[in-house]
Length: 548
Image (tube, rainbow, N blue to C red):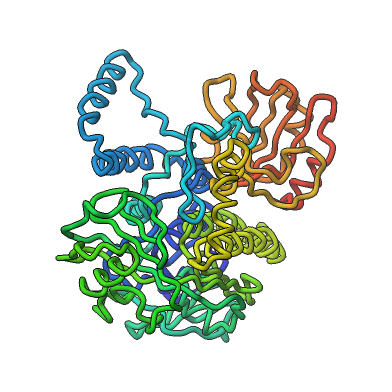
């Protein structure tokens, strides 16, 4: 554990993370893996049960797989897929599927069934799985995480990450609100003021406290973007008359509504401007006090307006939220000792399910870098790469969601555009392109080097010893993969202490590769083919990890 920022004060920490949602918890876990002492403060006293993201894309699931959480994701996925199948009228298949699974287990084939590749939708235009070309190179070597996160809702992911944080020894204080902060006059750090009346001294503060981030506002980050034009509701309800509603996504003359993919889940979108009271868009405040609750009557009126089904009646609301398409992004993600991640750094409409995945990527990118700076084994300039690498991906997500709003509008021009996009989506090339974008497999960083793998998310190589590359990333360290048993290659990694693991093993499926240097976040920093030697490896190692 680092002591670089500790003082005699018992409440000092290397990093304070404001916000204990999935992004804040995952970042805290990454910081602990890197050796930082972390405190997470979360205003909610309990896990927020409000319906939010319904799942993760491929990139998000791969991120969790690389930290050894695939079994947890698979179990959550298995629980939820039966719920969705029941809604689609497939209850009779459940006993048969369970029988087949038991038979396979008896035969020794007890590995979880690989779920189908992520298909999804664009602006409610559903993509057909039979049109998806899975031979596209972008989907090669993804590994066992492919599709697993699709049916894992955000609330379950938060529980998974909460349990992991506890195992790693992260201190999480729930029901505690960050109310302010000031520069630390006695040390190069920050004094964080908590609603409990306590002041906590820390080296760094990271705001993971959502779209209305207190940290972002108090630190003075700019937040440019585009104004909202929709009012949306998402809820889980008890209702009657729902049999008159179409299943799945439905476009009407008024807007869009969704019925499913499990009983009682509804969503509506109307193009009548943003909610009247945007700051109270959630059913509950982050502190858990009921404010501006969304009533059954309010949801029912919206659903009737959009669907045109006057017989539908909502009797009880289990979970609900308002949302809009406000799209904004901080110009930079760091100001001195204060950083932003997740929705605190960027907000947008929920269409396409990109927000949760974007935030997890932020946390994976920032965690190992900030931990290295905290430990004193990397200069603060390493943090410059955080904004440089993550900001362009965030900007893409904002535009991706804006494009969907344009195609969902109910005016004649947008409807004409929607018909064109639908025609394109119903081709193999169109489906494959859209799935590639939604899944996040296209994401890469602009890193120095000529090899095609440099800057890409690392392929999950099957290795000769029966392991996969992802198995070697669980501890959050970089991995130099020596695929040709080259002592000279391994010698170049000496002097980097516990920051770089060296793994010598063959890869029969990729005989052309000499080796890979994979950063702790799973992205390839250096790669070479046979005959290339180790050219550029030492410079790359020293750039990211600084020889001791």
